[in-house]
Image 1 (cartoon, protein in one colour):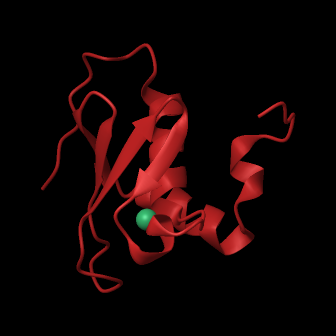
Image 2 (cartoon, protein in one colour; image 1 turned 135 degrees about the vertical axis):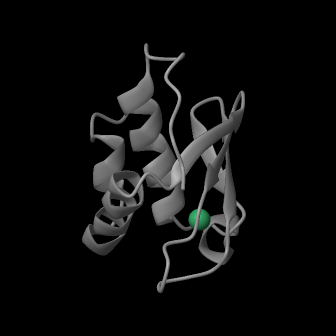
Length: 95
Ligand SMILES: [Zn+2]
C-alpha cells in the first residue's frame, strides 16, 4: 500500500454516509474470524452481504464489492473492526 490516506477517505461521501448508517443501526456483526455480515437496512434493501477481510483487504458479496468497487459494506466492516478492536468479548444485540 504505502498510502497515508485514511482508508475511509478512499470511499465516496455517499458511501461513507451509508457505511456510518449501517454501523449506527448495528447492522454489522462478526460471523467468524475474517468474516463479517452486513444486515440489510429496512426499507432500503433486503439482501444480507458477507464481507471477508483477508490481509487487510476487503471483499464483499454485493455487486459493487465483487468488482473493484469500494462498497459501503466493506467500509462499515472496517469501521466496525476499528470500533470493536480490543473489546472482543463484547456481545452485540440484534432484534
Ligand atoms: Zn458490498
